[in-house]
Length: 502
Image (cartoon, rainbow, N blue to C red; front, side, top):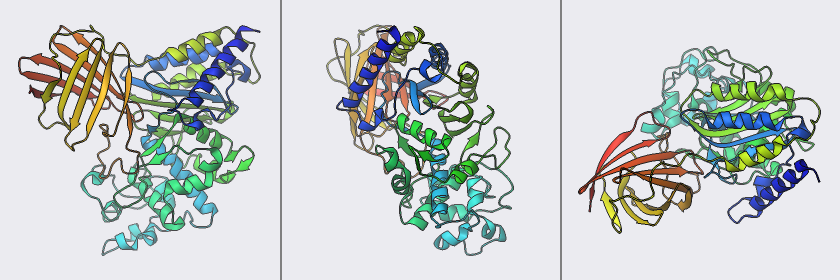
């Protein structure tokens, strides 16, 4: 048996173990797996890409999947992440809404030319301007509503639709203004015309056929899926969705989305200062490629001329064009039409993909400042932490963090390793919208790692592995006072909390 065949067998066994693990969802191993070389891609090009993505500054890679000809040829979930963990997708959610609109049109429930005002008579202002009356479904799809975006609106009111439609409207259909509330309105329209929430409609129309079952979507205070953000889904389900689109809506021989709609929603509709915008989808600067694109670096990259899909979930504070160009420059030039000879590089790829891990804090295993069940009381802070109870036994620190809403999060921190726990405490979230997390399952997976520096400085790192958030907290002990310097992975600056030991 050749080395490459042995490696493929070991890889398949690993996937099978994941498939049968108690915590895993069955759908994570649905797509067929193959070696890169069998699909015309050199393994070295893939692990060079993965190495480069992992090395990016101010970036945490949570998952990468590479698919060619409908087969997964490489995937990695750097520890403590796992394939079964869902991820919040920010504006990557919008492309799913674009599909739902096309399905509703195909069902004769909707037209691109339909006027927005007709769907929301109860939310219209007392005086309707000609511009508001002219706004259409197509204008929302292309982000040309004519309304100046107000990203704080969803944070300060629960009446999103009425507040939005009450704003000044300039000529719709002319000026591109990226706005998640446009997509929220589209989600509400789908619910109005189908009698089903957007997610339920997608489940009925495409997800059931694709075996995408472990999926959720945030729900607004008005009872609609948030649309422009809030999709909570596994990486492999994102890969399936990408395959569906590059196959023009066809899934295993069944036409789930009309071909013409896929072509229309992935074609350039509006010129912007960067890449062209389509219907809730972006064109790419790589010829023919298009993408679903979410904040902090959530991507489904679809490259039809290579019959490839690349999925990336992450939390990055740098411009995502760097990630995309790594794919264009390090991977795509090496893709060929037919299979490549077997290569020992595949064994290197397998080893690397199983060993990638996010950095744990550096330092020593033991410090001087923790007694049994040290309790720290905290003032008001943006993490909403009310108190921390810490205890160290050997190379594990146990913690109970109580939030201001009364929910407690019990977890463990490993030294130079990650320990995963589960909690009902909600993670910090960069979206401040009213009703956030509504519609999302209440159990979150949370991984912890620690290290001591200088004896009195405790570094804690918390990764919410089925969300997007991480928190770094350095605790400086000084008598009865504890100075905590903390920072979320999506924030630009740390902040300080002064706690008191009980």
